[in-house]
Length: 465
Image (spheres, rainbow, N blue to C red):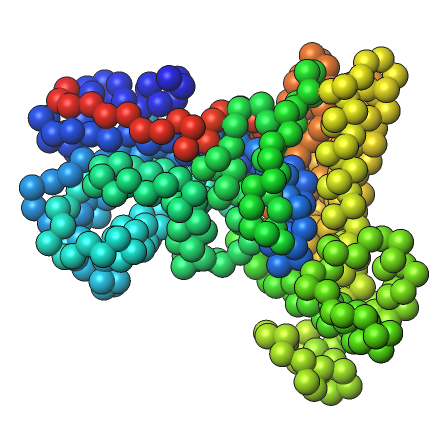
């Protein structure tokens, strides 16, 4: 059993009296664990049809649930050991399932407000799908998460996954993990900020230790797992700048790419070609040869509607917003190629030795640097993450650093760093410490592929203390 889960169970069993008192002494308690995750390559890719690479990290969300004899739902969200002054939310389970709001559910901590809402969404969504009634037994549920919030490390996805797995086991719903993961994405999109974190949710549920999960967005399927070769480690360094405002540039980039797709399909119609569904279907060469000239560098929303898109149904166009159509579209097209390059380069590293290993690492690293430049060009970068990438590049291969890029929704969050060799860990931590000194932002270091996903971990049960 993982050490963090063992500690959680010990504290509920009596090592932390306040936590122990939350549960009835003689009732069955079900435990679940879901890790955070790191976007390694692919970025925001669902709407583009691209391939995304994601991996679990060691930091996780832990849930413990115990059914009650009445219909009350008691929720206690905590950030870690000794966090016993956080409020306990108490509701009627029937009200939660019916979606009845309660103004007393919030407190001064946004993190806890979000966790409480997501847990409530899990109960509401899952029980509605199962067809449970308001007479279903209530529950005591504690959730702890030490995943940095707002850092693009899947903190909300882990909360959802841990909660869904715990509810499923405690109530004996016996839902397949694939269905839980799918429902997790729908719960996520009913929360604070709808996004394209399907790969994140899939990695949280189905990730494996020491492997990258390959998620194909066109088909919404896991396309396999890529083992990290011996000596290769991928770290995440948080920038200390949250992604609270990331939806604005993400939506702007999404619409810019949608306009690019529309313009390219108009050109294809002129050429007698059938339309494509995703920009990622184009190779870079075909794009440059046939379509680059038809994309404007930037266009005002009102100008697009007036001159081009009168019959276009692209939703959400802001008439006064300037959209970087070319940058947004090219990021999608070239990112698909970069993800493929990254994967084949890692395979080369794993299958060779000596100079060919170094060449493979350099190619994989250049794909990451190119991804960062392209993502920043779309308007989703920030000074903090670019500073971390610059520091990684300055350290370079001589110190075990081969590549780095901004991750997730961008506009802050975390930088992924590709490393090789036993000395690289010290280099990464030196970069994080130097960055903290330089900016005043506390940088946390996480390691990709550190733990199993929620499905592999499963659940544990215990009775009494």
